[in-house]
Length: 120
Image (cartoon, rainbow, N blue to C red; front, side, top):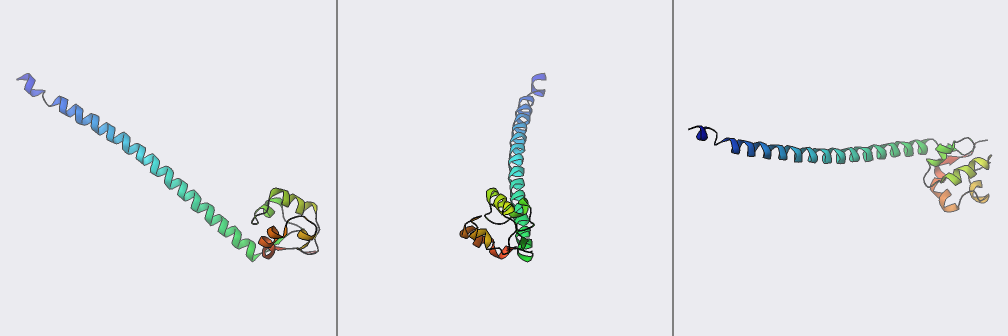
């Protein structure tokens, strides 16, 4: 009679073990989904920030004579070396001087021409 009373114990233990495995798998899935969602949110936030920055630079041209290196680097295609050359080449009477003075190639200047100014 005692043996019949405990016959369900192995079944209960087996179910408990399976439930533990399922919980662990669900935890791993949750971690993976969280990581993926975080990556997507980060990408979206970067895209929004880039859009805001681009909009700002289009509405308010960047002055080549006063812009910081970081501001120059925010312009599309401008490299650190070009930003340093712009700063070293100041002052500019007009924006096109960055090409005529060989500070940056015309192809790169064309990308930023409508976003920069040279105020005296």
